[in-house]
View 1 (cartoon, rainbow, N blue to C red):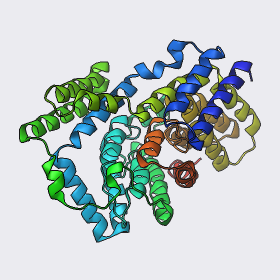
View 2: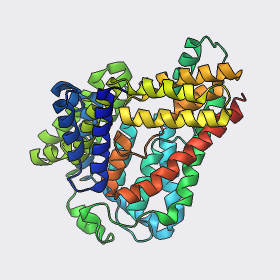
View 3: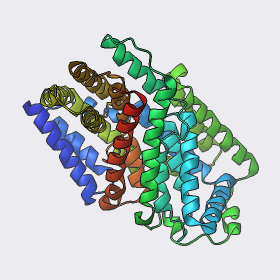
Length: 427
C-alpha cells in the first residue's frame, strides 16, 4: 500500500467519523476532507471539489428546489392527508403498503435511479407526524426501497454489465434475463424481510420542524396554496424535469439541465422567491453529496480498489466454498463501490477476479458474475453515497439509529443475493 493510499484512506475514515459523531454541521465533514486531500497533495482543487460540477449533483440540487415548489401545491396537501389516513387506519399495514408502493415504482425506474430516490425522499419528507406511523419509520425504509424493484423487469444496466464481463473473460454462455430478474427479486425479498423484522425497532420522531404536532386542520394548509394557474405550471415543469432525467441517456447533460429550466420558471412566476431557491439548491444534503464525490474519486485514483481486489483473490486461493467466495466478493464490491463512489468501475475490477477464481475451481462463474455486479448497488450502510446520505439527512437520524437498520440490511440482502444467484445459476 502506497503512502498516498494510506493518506487518502485515513482522510476518508476521518470524514466518516465526523459525519457519525455529529459534532459539526451536517454536510461540513466532506468539505473538510476535500481540503485535507488538497493539502496533502492527493488531488488538486479541481479534483477535490469536482462534485460541485458533477451532473448528478447539479440535477439533485435542481430537484430539491422543484420539490420545495411542489410542497406549496394541493398535491402535497392531498398526499399528506392520504398518508395520515393510512397511518390512522393501521400503522404496520400502512408501513408495508408504502414500502411496496415505492418498490413498485422502482420496478419502472430501475435499480440505482437517482431521479427516483430524490423524488421519493422529497415526497416522504413532507409526511405529517403520526404516533401510529411516524415519518422516521417510513423515510428509512421507503427511502431505501427506491433501490429495490418489486417486479424487477428493468434490469438492463446490470444485465448488460454481466454479459460484458463474462464475454471479456471468454465466456459466451447465454444468461437468462428471467433468471437474472429472479436474482434481483431475491435481493428485494431480503430487503423487505429486514423492513418487517425492524418495524418495532425503528425510531419515532418528527422529521421536519413543521411536523412536531400531528396534522390538525386541512383548512390552514389550504390557505397557503398557490393560485390554480401557478399550480398547473408547477406540475408541468415537474413533469418536464422528470422527463429530462429519464431521457438523459438520449439527451446527455441537456437532460439534467432541463430541471434547471424548470427551477427558472418556478422562480420567474413567483412560486419560490430567490432565497427559497438558494436555500434549496445549497441545502446541507447537497454539500454532503458533492463533497463525498471528491473524496471518493481521490480514493479510487490511488489504486486502492485494484490492490484490494488482487490481494483478496490471492488470499482465497483455489480451495474455497462457492457461497463463501461469492458472498465475500459481494461485500468487497459493495464496500469499495461506496467508498470510491465508482460503482461500475469497482464492479469491473472485482467481477473478473471472481470469474477467474471460479474458473480455477472448475465452477460456472455465471452466479458469481450476477451477484457481484448487483452487489455494486448494495452498499448503503455508510452515509457517504447519494441515497444513504439523503436518507440520513432527510430522516434526521443519529448514527446509532442509522446503523441499527442499515448494517443488518446490508448483510441480509447480500446473503439473499448470494443464495439467489446460486439457486438460479447452479455452479
